[in-house]
Length: 588
Image (cartoon, rainbow, N blue to C red; front, top):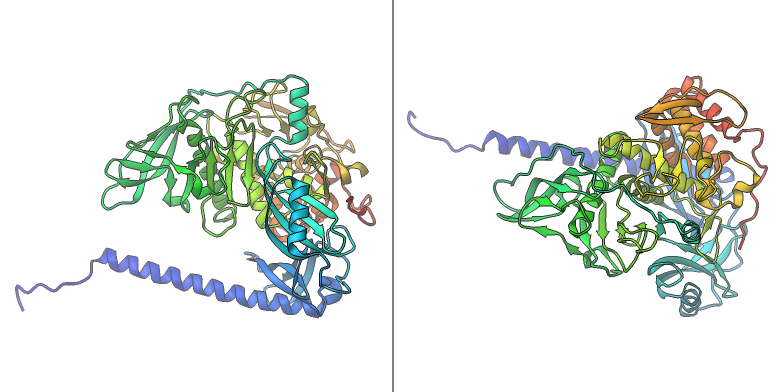
């Protein structure tokens, strides 16, 4: 009928509904596909027990499931023996596109067998032992099978908080023998950017860090308010300590109220600890401002450090998502969080698994007089979170001063340096020119903390360029140079080179010449190896094998990329020929 109006949904609403329905269908299909992969991997692990080491009394719990563009499937499992979780028993089962078994990567190469899983020690007794050893408060206590040192042992794993054996109220994972009560290991879960050994060296030599702060260079940033209902994303800007003015996406909660939380990046947020050692992220005070311009570029404004932290965590998140498709540190869509002004006179920065967040102190007032909120520090520490969610490298031992040792621990530090550097290159801020130096903004006398091209230029930590038999029990920051150097050679090649104004001259152990394949390809190979082919006990020779497999997956076993991976590892003295026949027993 002429003149009659019919009410119909707007096209925008309809389109959004259809998009939401498609997204839901895609999510459901992905979940179903992964469920089939897990089922096939479990069956394969049992059918190939001689290779996987999975016994009839064991079950497998899923940690991660990955489906490669090329068709392979990988399922990372934790092992459970007669109902008891196994520490150091992780494995990855590899399948082809049709779910046929291809192989396994496993942390231990012996069968789990115990006469009993009934402990002699009670859980409270074990908790008391753990709390005493780490000088803290015992928390979660669980019965486990500790397989990290070769012979499996029934034990308790105790989480100890407020430990006074570290510079702050650190968190430790303490393993106690369930029969004898002996403390088998005590591993810090909040691993600081500045190691105890380095801190001692700096103090003994009287060095004072003079960081490069107050940069005037700027990145274009425009402030703006959201329109419509609240809360809503809003575009703001911040004046940072290290890189001048930066853009920030914040949350507008009212007409004149903004919070330093990024709803476009999984709710990534920075909060204020107020000089206290808070126990969880929620205990931090949100940064709230009437305007959407944050900090003043100096430490006189407590918000300034928060600007660097927020910029660092969102830049790292953007790097992992755009480069690898990784959505969050744990690949679960959640944005990383940060807490600034943590503790009293804390000259360090930490990744804390307990709160899944970054913790930044304001400096110890002696060696470090500024918060360690530089971009590569954040990229380094958040990468520890990525490693924890994937291969979860573990040190072979930890000494009484909390220094960590061993090749797997060295790989942990190395990957954190590699991808911390990669965050700089991806962010490409002119006030923080990307380079292969780590901690160059901290103001140390040697102008950097570590470097990837020739690691032995680091005299503070004694970082090495090449592998030798001492690598098995080398302090992890010193040992990290082996794989960091291999990555640099793979990306940039050997010899002299200038990148963004920094001169490099990377040597090789065997005098060979290595032609790099480019940083982008090197990053893809190392990330594929980390997430698919490495486990908690991976050493340098196993890392070589893992990166070769990753290169074969992506580029082919006859490719230049594959051959260059082999050359890069040979150039740091990691070869098939000098692979140890078996790993030395872990020191207790």
